[in-house]
Image 1 (cartoon, helix red, strand yellow):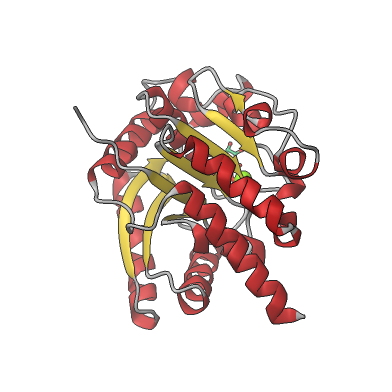
Image 2 (image 1 turned 30 degrees about the horizontal axis):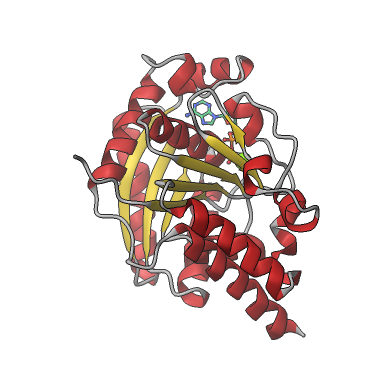
Length: 277
Ligand SMILES: Nc1ncnc2c1ncn2[C@@H]1O[C@H](COP(=O)(O)OP(=O)(O)OP(=O)(O)O)[C@@H](O)[C@H]1O
Ligand SMILES: [Mg+2]
């Protein structure tokens, strides 16, 4: 029997529109379709749109769990692939204001599903906001999405700088998105790693290169992830390679579990609150 290592992975990038949501949704869908019990947390509370990409409409979010007495089961929406979607809604921002009882409730709910859960993938918002950094800090693995644009490289660099300096993270996996060729993708990564290595003491690993692919746009129109809508497309093949790599590389630190993610997240937020008050 193959042992699946539990993964908590945040997909981020600094810059808007680099493909974070596409990447989170397609990776999560593939993991789910390999019969791994997978949750996708839409951490982009401003512009929550993961549900559109995976083609299901989420009615409820973490807020309803935290403040309206709904169970975790009730706020989870299951996509055709088996992927379980949790919309952060305004719940994520409010984690810092939870009472001890509410915090315990949330951690317990995730503890209860822990044994049955293989992966938690988190789609983050663009920008270097405190809330994004906190999500990253709590995640065992961080995928940074870049493309060849200088603004994307600059924003990803700035994000790594903050997260490594202030949140003690020192390992990052990079996906180069929208590459017009494998060679261009490799060149973008080399350029990026040269800049990072010059100024920061962190480990950067190339997780994969995703081509610029019109089928991603066609899949959006069908409201399906490209790995489902067009499994033979170039980008779908790239997503398969990435997920195989994720399953191969030894992932997380021992403390990388799912309830740990929420514990750490609330700790970060409480810490931040105390820090500013
Ligand atoms: N590899 C690709 N090839 C072609 N188009 C792509 C690719 N990746 C993403 N896109 C397009 O780029 C747009 C932005 O993608 P996405 O919404 O995933 O970015 P994002 O980083 O999540 O944006 P935001 O910062 O607004 O959350 C999408 O509309 C999608 O059509
Ligand atoms: Mg997005």
